Amino acid sequence: MIDIDEAIRIVLESARDFGTEHIPLNHGIGRVLKEKWYCDRDLPPYDRVTMDGIAINFEGARGLDSLKIERIIAAGDPQTALSNPSHCVEIMTGASMPIGADTVIRYEDVTIRNGSATVNREYRKSQNIHFKGEDRKKGELLVSENTLLSASEIGVGASIGKGAIEVAKNPRVIIASTGNELVEVHETPLPHQIRKGNVYRIQSTLRNLGILATIAHIKDDEKETADKLRDYLVEYDCIIFSGGVSRGKFDFLPGALDQCRVNKLFHKVAQRPGKPFWFGVHPKGTTIFALPGNPVSSFMCLQIYVLDWLRVCFGLKPMDRPNAVLTQEVSFRPDLTYFLEVRLSYDHQGRILATPQKGHGSGDMANLMNGDAFIRIPRGKEIFQKGEVYPIYMYR
Image (tube, rainbow, N blue to C red; front, top):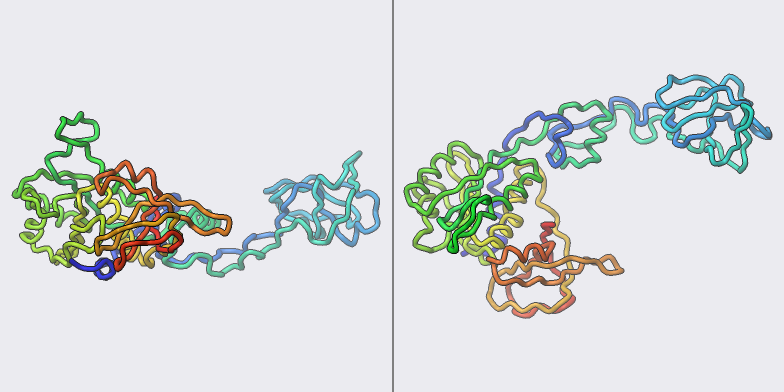
């Protein structure tokens, strides 16, 4: 059994690059960019009006009671010119400023009658204009390589014509549950059976990263376990097992992994939940996460190990983990790193507060709904006081 920091180090050092692929821009959210985006022109590309109103020449309008309106300009109209500096034009948000005009006064501050505009309050030169190149200049780097794309980057990509983008290629992932007690979601379980939950919990978490993982199931049969494992090793880059890694007489997975020459890097971590966690890599490169079958254990190991492994594979750093303040005293006797489910809130100073949501062990999947995160409580003592601060792994 190894310490959690050693387990995390081993997992992250096994990360590997799966290459790149080109996808449509509108499929890019949550993916990791593998190219650099530069401005193809100034942003904004012209002096852009930011308020509906009138455009004037500041000096030409000085001291005038009213200004004759020459025309109305809409967003998308070609740029025109103000023919007389003592006149004005009505102009809409997003339109290009006319040549000869340098100030925009919003409609709320003018009165328009009989083709003329009267200004009702003071104004300053150059107001309500978003000037050409004010945000970024042509040729300037906009988005760096290895950026995790959000809606902000997608919008920027659209503005510079990135219809297709190069991103980190996702690994081919299969999530396999084990156990004769499991039935499909649509089936009615017998009294001694339960519906599958872990695989859907894991699959939906990976879907947030754009990974469309396959789901499979293996019965408690030694030969079937080995046969299916051989097939998975050929077809997939990453295999995530749920269950079958403890010491039970029907836990055939560790033996099958040995039989298929998977290099075991560790089995069992000094943590709760998730102590039986098994991790290894096949010589051809397939990475295997064999998570415990209990739902809280498998979900916790996914959050702590698998997600950061994927980030490093994509060229990112492991997720930064904020700290939170315990709102209650916690007692934990075993010499293990403890991942306790907590509900998060915030105080008036902006601190994150973690309120323990202790359930009924690692089989209490319903208790996950009461929390927002796991708080990592270290080994070395038994009583953790209210007000102590520890890192959190947010899953909501």
